[in-house]
Image (cartoon, rainbow, N blue to C red; front, side, top):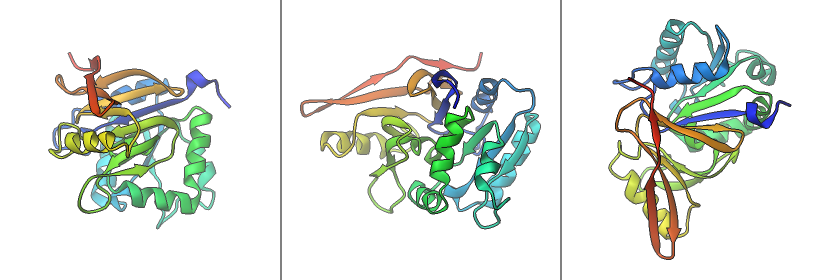
Length: 237
């Protein structure tokens, strides 16, 4: 097991390589945390139903970034030894989509435990949207049609998380409503383009690939929800 300060999670609210306006600043930031010249990066596209287009985008981008890319499929597994496959990577990148279905499949295959082991061994964990909220105790999700709801997640990190805070009109009011009703724990929301970098279980910094994208801390005070914009470091010039 590595030291606590070598365990890293980078949770992105949106604006990663799969978006139309992606500038790859967040991806380049993730690669720098690995501190390897040609890191091995595993993409887990479970939440998108293993979308072929999403997987092709990943390979195109990460070949361009001089990494050694691969992906984990549950319908065409790369190996009988999924634990060994995952632990053989430097970075694990989880894509967006349906978080509830993703977590159910992970738990069936035991990948939730493998990911915790990878994190404990110093593999950098990261992801966008579903691939961001999954690391927290709870997340705000649209996995079930209708209203946004709370979802119990992996619990590597304390509290709750809400992605797409400025990118989807219902995100902010839904998170506030869940907090006000006591249905979700306090946490952090991220605009599209903003991300949270954790070292161990402590927040190291909030970062962004867009000048105005921010992260926000949210908690309740009596019957009120208090939202505070965090200092968010823009990765561009």
